Amino acid sequence: MANRRFEMHQYRHVIVQMRLGQSDRAIASSGLMGRKKAGLVRSVAQKEGWLDVSAPLPDEAALSQVFGDVPPRGPASVVLPHQAEVTKWWEQGCQNRFYI
Image 1 (cartoon, one colour):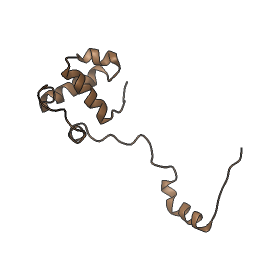
Image 2 (cartoon, rainbow, N blue to C red):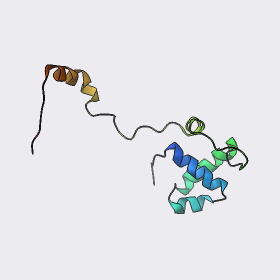
Image 3 (tube, helix red, strand yellow):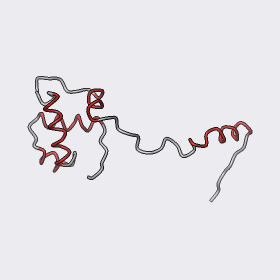
Image 4 (tube, rainbow, N blue to C red):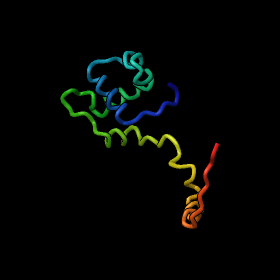
């Protein structure tokens, strides 16, 4: 699971499991995240008070402040760098159809 990116709902799910008493090893064996990452999440959650069962779960804004925003999975579009040129061609009515 090296260099795996996590969404905020995944962090929240792990925190829920920790609040239920799951160990880092149990979280890792369930496939949610690795033991080292779970340990880091646990230390942050303890510091923030998120493991207290009487406290509400953190929302996605609070999680993203602590863990950072998740970068997009890939470029928005491969055409984006050429947007002006493609727009000009589209306005001219150019079409390109590939037939294989």
